[in-house]
Image (cartoon, rainbow, N blue to C red; front, side, top):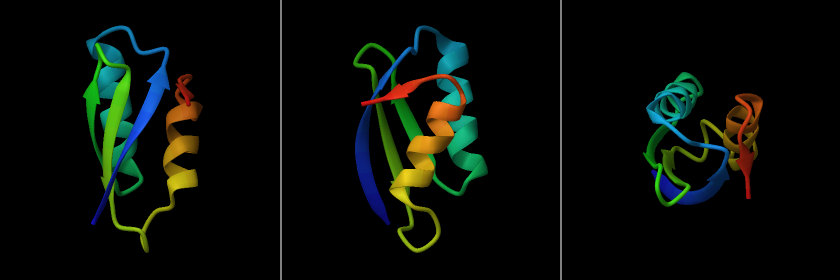
Amino acid sequence: MKTITLNVEGMSCNHCVMTIEKTLKEIGASGKVDLAGHKVEVSYEEGAVSLEKIKEAIEDQGYDVK
């Protein structure tokens, strides 16, 4: 299992947290959102989902991954 931290812009409330965590779960990853720090810690299996897929899934919800 690999864990990375992404900087994510555009998160402002608990709804954002739930949206991102649900989206990551749907693609086979798990995430812990730090709303104040504008960060998402993502854990995933490298063979099951790619970093690009994770970034794309978050961006598809309207957030910017830096």
